[in-house]
Amino acid sequence: MEVIEGCRLPVLRRNQENEDEWPLAEILSVKDISGRKVFYVHYIDFNKRLDEWVTPERLDLKKIQFPKKEAKTPTKNGLPGSRPSSPERDLKTLDLSLHTSAAGIGKTIPTPGLPYLASSASLQRVSVVKIPDRTNSIENVTKNLLSKRKLEAVSLTTQCSPATPVAPAPEIPTPVFAQQNGSVRRAVSVVTGRKRKAGCLGTDEDSQDSSDGIPSAPRMTGSLVSDRSHDDIVTRMKNIECIELGRHRLKPWYFSPYPQELTSLPVLYLCEFCLKYLKSLKCLQRHLTKCNLRHPPGNEIYRKGTISFFEIDGRKNKNYSQNLCLLAKCFLDHKTLYYDTDPFLFYVMTEYDCKGFHIVGYFSKEKESTEDYNVACILTLPPYQRRGYGKLLIEFSYELSKVEGKTGTPEKPLSDLGLLSYRSYWSQTILEILMELKSENGERPQITINEISELTSIKKEDVISTLQYLNLINYYKGQYILTLSEDIVEGHEKAMMKRHLRIDSKCLHFTPKDWSKRGKW
Image (cartoon, rainbow, N blue to C red; front, side, top):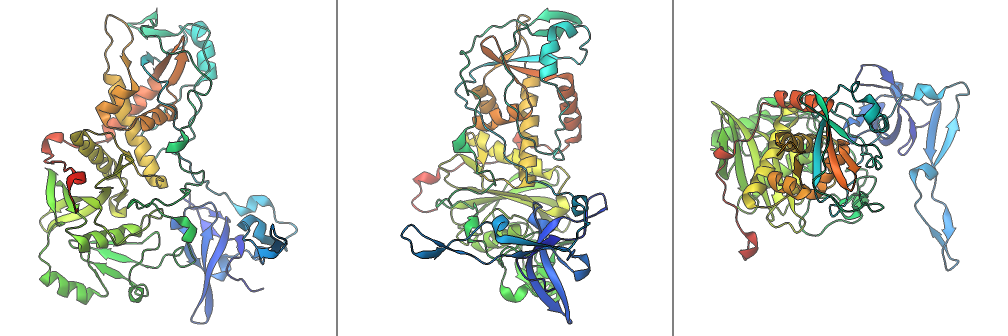
């Protein structure tokens, strides 16, 4: 039986627990190495960074699905035509295993979706109620509330898995009580909100991406959002085996359009200061004797300790910006690489030692964004991930927005890791604001969505979606109440204790430019 491109079948792989599993995979390419066939597979419902070359021993040929030829169908005029059909309809199954159980196929990981955004018009002012975890003393009063809406601990690190936000709780007929100074006191409502309308916390469709994370049409304003309609078999496959960047060797996750002659090399060498790509170690050594850079080109606008940020104009430093985009594309699947970097600014984070300033990560932003985007692409290089640098990049982007006097939001769609990092940052930042509120005259502290947005420079839609994601919003007697349980508070405090890297606004030396008044960037 010959396995061809387009076939689907179970493929053996090791999961994170180092256990064998057989997820369904699609054959993207077949090649011969020394007379032996190897297959490039994409695991269905898994991220593309897990795609790999496998040997025939890892294929389960007993349950193979062959691609079906396109069937000609009549058009409206009655003339024969053809239409592409979905992969599910394209496949005909050849089941040669009569005794194979479905459990042997293994588990698949669904792609996380984006959070639902609520309409901000109805959330005028909300009260904050802190509820301790001692529910025995007020069990009779809050039984309905706690049974319908269990307040669970939320992990606010980037390791938390995304979940679909729940709808707001229904109106609570029983009074809401808050614990203060060891006694039970009635929560006093000061500001009465509007009467609740049907669907007032519905989704904001204009702020959402399609369910599969793919925009319906590519934007033409210099954005880096990928138009996935032109994907072909070449761009779906990793083309670089290994990259050496300074003291690190990186294994790319995705396709990047480096020159074709470099894709067959076992290792691609990059200068860690100017990011120029070279084909051999000898070429790199010769280049380093002539390269005078020891930091990214551009202006250093932030330095604290060993951490620095450099602002790089995509028009003034085209070569560096294009090389940076080529490197970033190896780890970002959802963006399209444009060689016209003029409309963008790049903010590169570095770590300093005696040899120079080593790149850790970066984010880019449009000089003029009509949709309040303060980030176009954002990336922490794999050797520096899971160390707090991602949140530091996000915090820095919002610090720039504060100086500019604007609210901002990242360009959608976010990658899975980007979504986790942003949710975590939004959660920690908003909870930090809420926990610093102090009550006046013994009444509940109050704050508006607009005030949270102004304090943090986080866009209102992102504030609302985060409150929904954390499941904090209750509706009671004509107003919205944010209920903070002890679990939420304790989880937030633990997360903040682990967050050692923070942006110090006193170390930022940044003057925003009005790009709209410039004839040419």
